[in-house]
Length: 139
Image (cartoon, rainbow, N blue to C red; front, side, top):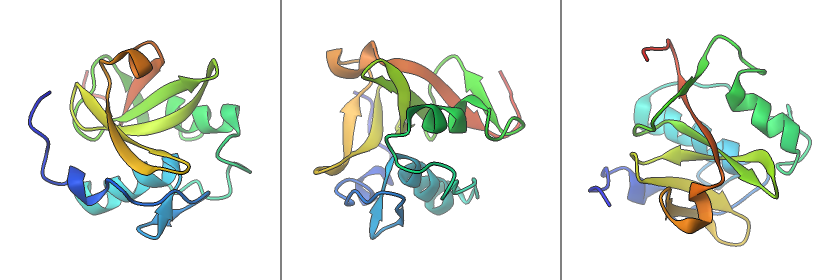
């Protein structure tokens, strides 16, 4: 695995909290929101209240695929540090994480909080729905 960016350790272990958007607890979108704000000085929408529950599959997928904000999220072919990663869980594109590079990502699991896992391992490789970048497309 590539060397980890120094900011990654600041997020590992943050607790899970439905609709959480700060260091007190995050859901999967909240982690992306927090990382963008703190590490990249980018204000992405919090989308708080846009979905009833983090398990709302279609609503969560729409956040990254552009249906919720058509002009800002763009699908890219390969992950770069900070890109959003959309993953399938139980066959549905409903979980998001933050790319640490091309090989790993941060995401949050209820009960475990924020963890880092490999994008190349058997658990997630076949579940990747796509990578999304905020801002003007440059691919």
